[in-house]
Image (cartoon, rainbow over all chains, first blue to last red; front, side, top):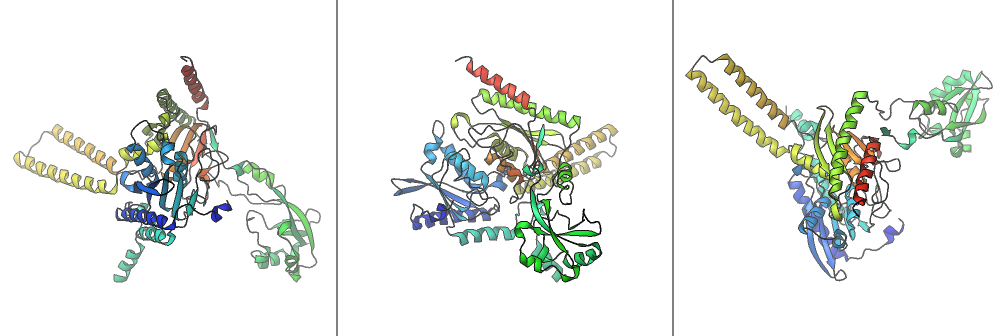
Length: 195
Length: 346
């Protein structure tokens, strides 16, 4: 645990920032579609981290399909495995794949990445409610019966937070009014003032 | 069947030494008024501890709880107000963990008096009928698990149950066959299918409402026409029409009364869900989880057991009740039968 902060990440900061920005773009697409504003990019690194190409990119789709488990990481995993058809070894595929995500993977996603045996994870802001890569549980380092993987956080943290903030200021418009945590307070107030 | 409870429900008393101040009981009111909520004598996490008790040795004296012995220092002693002199400091034993059940309360209360709030965590008592129904649903799940096991998947299946309508809404089985896509656990599959079949998204809702309006308008037009054509209708035909109208209205209502993920629904799983699936259940906001077999911790860790109760973590925004060992004997015998069947041909 202590060595986690001292440990230096193996990629150049330019490359990390480049892909983090792509992930942020995905999260902005999510905001436009009224989905929770988290996006991610999965990148295949080969030739000693010299060559890299995007394998999958996605954002949260929980509202679109009415399925609370469709976080962006899960979408990417499914997309990659569907591409490969049949007869493959998922551990071999994910051994080369690095994840860039705007928000720390939740406990569910962190364990699914662990099951897949992903290479590395870089994330933006920390997730104080559900974080599975060190905040609430350390599913990436502790032995929970699946693979472990290095995880580094805090890249472009402010930008990632901003997108999430913008989303939560609006509230989840896909929900019925009475089920929303955050209701239209501002508009109500304006109505009272105007009336 | 047995309800999975947090560890502290079964905990024995964690007894620690504490310092109390003993003085004449005439001065009790003064002490409580002035120092009942004072920062010098605050109880921190020991809110269940009562402030004061009668001295056992001297009935004209009372004892006032100051602090645990570890937190006690000279500064605290200096802050004891002069008005209550003469006083003496005494060491007592106190149970510092909060009682969650009545048995615990009776046991903990023997040390220093404490308070007990009933039902901090709901303990469910089932009637025989409910119990039978639960067992029956679990048996159906086990049957599904058996079928998927024969296709070389893990012996696991899952059902979503609506406790109000008393109806199973969705079945799903494990599909991690040949280690391809090992996140296709039955819980993840059931959420996918449930979303496809039962959840009406906001956009779909809007289109349904529009369609219904169109249909209703058409019906009205037709009725008007019919009434104009012949004013007298046979009564039976009228009744039929009304009935069919009601039915169509009901079906529309049903399709619009959408679920918000799995809010208020119960989930039945044959084997204990792994950490990923446990969290998926939290994201889906289920009401209760029933599972039959505990995870043996060989391959993947379970998320709903005494060690790792993901359903009861404070930081998460949702929690649900868990019941384990539902029809576990039946599940075990079915599983071992399947395994024997596998071994025979070899």
